[in-house]
Length: 392
Image 1 (cartoon, helix red, strand yellow):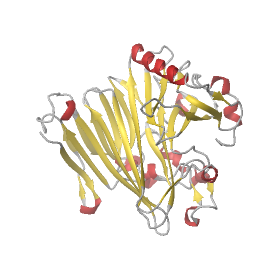
Image 2 (tube, helix red, strand yellow):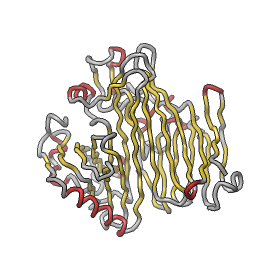
Image 3 (spheres, helix red, strand yellow):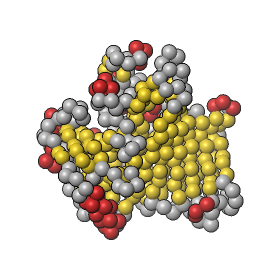
């Protein structure tokens, strides 16, 4: 069997499939593995009305992908281990019900509950007025618009090579008249029976003038990986707290508290170190070290890393974020001053890749820890006790 493509959505041809089930009964020649499946459906009721959901199961790993929400990943599971977090926002929210400008530009939070969502493409970070950019884009809202923009093209590929691969492709445009115009082309792929998945993105400037872009992957993890005594580990050359609140916890930046009422978030900015292949491993492991959530990313593509700690009560959202990006989530004017905005000429693009691996035993967690320790030994990690101008 050659690779097979199934088109789910294409606005240009008015193609749209509301519900479809793919499995060994529909595509018996794809793989001898009987446990894989793909289920595309549309959610109904409340603020989830009209949200497209694609559930991918590779035999061990399950992922729920949201084309309606910028090709984000809502949640998942691996061999029964839940992936994601318990947000106060319980179900996927249709962007039609999100007003990004409400509450002082914090409307993004009204739909925030994903395992993985993108922040960008024009901007990310806090809201405010950026007077130095395109005047029509000067009023910025929290973390930009891409996570609340539906895909106009979605397809699935079944590739039988190398044991069988499932690939979900989505295309999302973010643009307006007189403003920037970007195209996000995303491919999420996973091999049958594996414990990992990859996301490969390409962002292209479709406009007729140079345009500034920002992109950050908000990767959010809760229980059972996150608990009192959990650890964060990543090789880095330098790190600084985002603000005075984060500086309060600098001595314990790499460990976690249990759920606490009235906990105020903390964030730390890192200059990562990569291995000989250009990849940086960032690991969250539970207290006993028997579970690990591993994020791998290419430093050349995603040179900035943010650790977000939000250990408030579980009902309020007990979560941490492992966040590689082309920039730090400061206000866009700060990132422009630091030279971290990506300016694309018309037709130009940049590419990124992240790899998520789920580690479900102490041996696999220890192996990654040893690798991080070895990479960390390349240079002395510099930890700043206070904010630094080059970071924030």
